[in-house]
Image 1: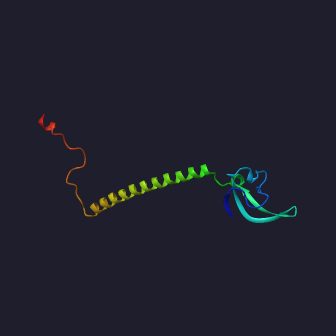
Image 2 (image 1 turned 90 degrees about the horizontal axis):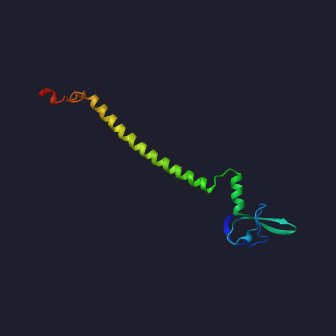
Image 3 (image 1 turned 45 degrees about the vertical axis):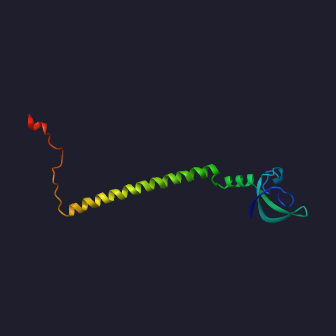
Length: 125
């Protein structure tokens, strides 16, 4: 099967999915040549499916439309970016935790007391 634009080479140049228009009604209409021939009224005819028919069949089967697909792809890109940002943040936090664990394992004692520094103006009074 292949997607083609223009007039189909074999008669009747119509879409096999009714009620869609004959393919030769619009020279820019794309169609799928299924490669399947069938006999109708004693003549061998080729089965074509027009682009509007393909879109309708896709809709009926539950496939996303082009706009839905574009929206989901954009959402996916945004989620990948967010995942990358959060992963980098997690890695930084892990490094900090590892540094704290290392200091704790070496009986580290802080040189300064924890809390706010004493005010120097309080001594002058």
